[in-house]
Length: 105
Image (tube, rainbow, N blue to C red):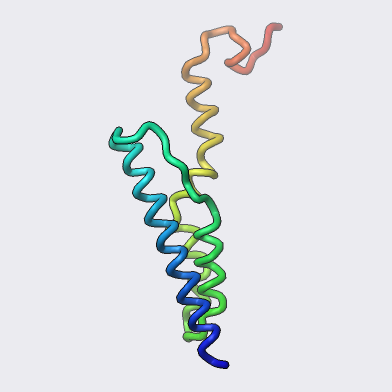
């Protein structure tokens, strides 16, 4: 059955697009102040898009397996969140406090 890989690839890529657009909309609403926080769907959409491209029966599509990881902002947000949190904590720490990373000694 030759249609099965194509149907599965399209379904996975549509799921990726829905997840990525939802994540972009949520992050945009937080950035503009319309919402205080948002719930992302991290990694799942990018993984679905990656698999969809890898199983796609069309020539040249497999080489783009990495594109969903780059386009889904939830991946970047979850990778950068610990660094941003640490940077914010350092910026708000009082000199000489434990939060600054020096300890009490």
